[in-house]
Every structure is written in C-alpha cells, then in structure tokens.
Amino acid sequence: MIAQALRERMPEACDSVVLLPHFTPHPKGLQTLGGRVVELSAEQRELAAACEEERSLIEIDLDLSADKQSALQRLLAAGYLVRIPPASTGACVGERDCILSPHVDDAALSLGGLIASQRGRRAAPLVVNIFSLQSYQTGLRVPADQLDAVARTEDGLAGRITGYESCSLGLRGAQDRHGLAFGAVMGWRETELRAQMHVQRDVDQVVGAVVAATRKPVGRTPIARLFAPAAIGGHVDHLIVALAAPRIAALLAIPADRIIFYEDLPYAAAGTAGGISLDGHTPRLNDITATLDEKRTALSVFRTRLRATQIDLCIGHAKRIAGRNNAAERCFVRPNGPS
Image (cartoon, rainbow, N blue to C red; front, side, top):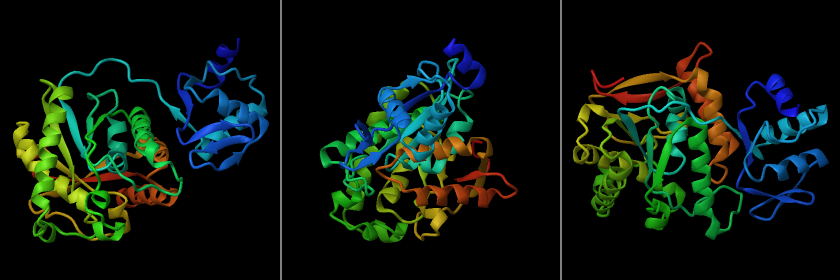
C-alpha cells in the first residue's frame, strides 16, 4: 500500500536517496567527519539514519505525513541527503567520449550539464581523474587519511547523477607535488609554464598514466571525442593536462580535430587569466538548460572541494553565457570538428 501510494504521489519514486559520505548519524542528528554535530528534528534524524545505506524512495517506510515529507525535503535541500536517478536503461554501444579531468570535480564543473544531457543517448563517457590526490579541502576538516576515499565517493555519486564512469590515476596535485601555496598554482600562461624545468617531466607522467589507464576500460571501443581543459585561469595542473592532450590523442589514435577543449570552471566564471593558446579553435555553446539542476546536484556532492558560492558562480555563468533564461557550457573546437 505504501509503495503504491508513493508511486502515485511521487512519480520519480524509482530514484534513490543516500546520506552523503561527509556525515554519520548521531543521537542529536548528524556528525561531520571533522567532529561537528548538526542537530536535527526527530523526523529528520530518523530519515537520515535510515538513508545511511542507499534506499529507494519506495522502500523508505514513510507514512506520508506532512512532517515526514517536510523532513525529507529539508534534508535534501540542506545537502545532507542526495537524490540519485535510476541507472540508464538500455545499453548504448559504439563510440564513447573520454574526458581528461585534472581533479575529481573538474569534469562535473565544466561538463556536468553536457554529460547529463546525453545520458541514455550515448555511451557513458569515461572521466579520467588525473591529479586525484590532494591534501586541499574546504572547511570540512575531513581527516587526512579519509580525504581521498571521500573524494572517490563524491566522484562516484556525481557520476551516477550525471551519467559518467570514472577512473582515478592517483597523481598528486601541484600544491603537494611542488609544495606550492594555492595562489602560486594559478594565473600561469602556456609560454611561462613551458619554461619551468619540471613541466616536461609532469607532462610525460600524465601522458603515460592516462594512456595506460584508458586502454583497459575503453578496450576496442573507439573514442569519439577527447575532452581536455583549456586551462582558463592558468592552474598548473590544468595546463599540464592541456599540454598532454595532443600526445595522448596521438597515442590513442584519436584525430587532432576530435580534441575538444572545455572552459575551466569556476575560474572562467571568475574571470581569472591564464591558459593555453586557443588559436585555430572557435567557441561552441552546449545547451544544458534541461540538465542544469542535475549539474547543480552533482556539484553539491563535492563538499570537500566546492563551496556554495563557487557552485552559484558556475550556475550563474551558465545562465549568463546562454541568455534568454537558458543555460550553457562552453567548449572550444576546431572548424568542422565533431559536434
């Protein structure tokens, strides 16, 4: 009876909900991995504890009272629970895209809407998280020995929300690799970075690691397009990946005109200078109006990496560049390149 009522009153009840990995149930509500206690109402405590393991909305034993419905919506709105759509039905065969993501959140930040818009119509893209080990985090204070595992869980949830698969290479980010402060990794231009002694070594490492990592999951499936960061904002790691992209494409037998550079967010939205030369490329807007909410949900999962202000900046940027109450993500392609 409850399941039937849920289907009638909640048409998307085949979705599931789960407590985000940054929280554990506590007698007063929830406790963050950093030890802070978040007090919740009795209804919210009950629901949060029930969703520590992923649950279908149909399976959750709701009595459909107004209080329970309100508790569920409040937990979702506060970002303690996240709603996950069902897996795409029907196997999509043929070519698949490969997305080079400098860090675990970059694919979702820059291409989350595009990925979600193609869910069920194209094979799930493979996101390769390159510099996936980072000691940097927001103010959550996740213990250092848990940070990487939490980041992988964030990535897995974002992939299920938008529709990508991923693998992580386990390379250290520039701040840890070279002992740099955050400000020192930003604002680089291609010519400036190429003059640094360590750059060629970093590029070589990325090329080798990406090619080795992609051959197994991609197998004999042709890669339709290779997405790489344009390194707007001049982040060292983004520039390294951008410089490695042509060599990676050549080794994976991907034609050069199938390399698509994506706009780096949130840096592009903030107007941060730096990046590679995009001579010979033209900007292309991808309409993500219908999937903007899915992108926002996916970004909200990356609590170790992103703050609400950064997410709002990205969402506002998507609306601004599209205009007319639409939303878009920007890429840079060669003339006559793939759509």
